[in-house]
Image 1 (cartoon, one colour):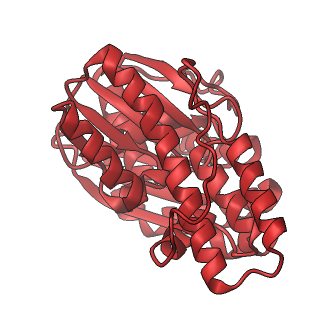
Image 2: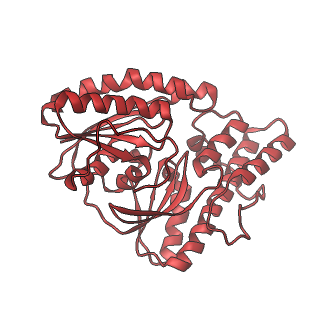
Length: 330
């Protein structure tokens, strides 16, 4: 079995994955959302202290598996440096104590493997990764060959949802709140701009849209509940249309055979439904991860690590460092 650890941001998680059939035997995640919501976002130092408290508690509940562990895997890039360090420190301690190899895992690569938890790996995939920190199109040809085709030049899709929610004092995390509000809103009330609509640049940008929403909120003044719902729906429509516009532009050049969507923000059902329609127009099936595995979790880290384990791709315990801003996947 492989023990995997995830602590790249504000989710403390440990999983146990069986090598023979990739089955997840144990998975537990403790979210820190309640502790961070009062601040309107993640406070790194607080997140680090909570990881130091929660990770050992989760490990204690998985101790029955420790005698069968053949490797320990841990997210070491990218993420918040102070939170990545908590997971890496635990992984190194387990590696030494159990005399087993250690595997450093790229967080975005792990998100791609969330598609294959409890299942076989299917490559190649054209992947749309949408999360609180990233918005990317990735060509995942195989385990060792993944290329970032397009990325955000400023805010990410998920980050923009959090910031719009904060503008309306709705709480954190903002993504689920905005999506819920949008269901009772008029998405055509506000004509928010579609970022980079008239640009051939294959990239994503949300700073301009976010600013347009801010100006509209300031113009409205005291927001009624319907105002909030309409702003949420109109923003979600524009944010999603931006992704669809750039993805459609790429698909016309690429003609993908299979498309996947991963990342915490991929749990947004409005985005999923719109992307599914787009993929159907290109005769490309859409592969999605189970909703419980969209956000950060150790099960996806373990699934990715399983492929590294089979290929004898281990890290040196002395050279395994954290890389907070790493963008290269391989």
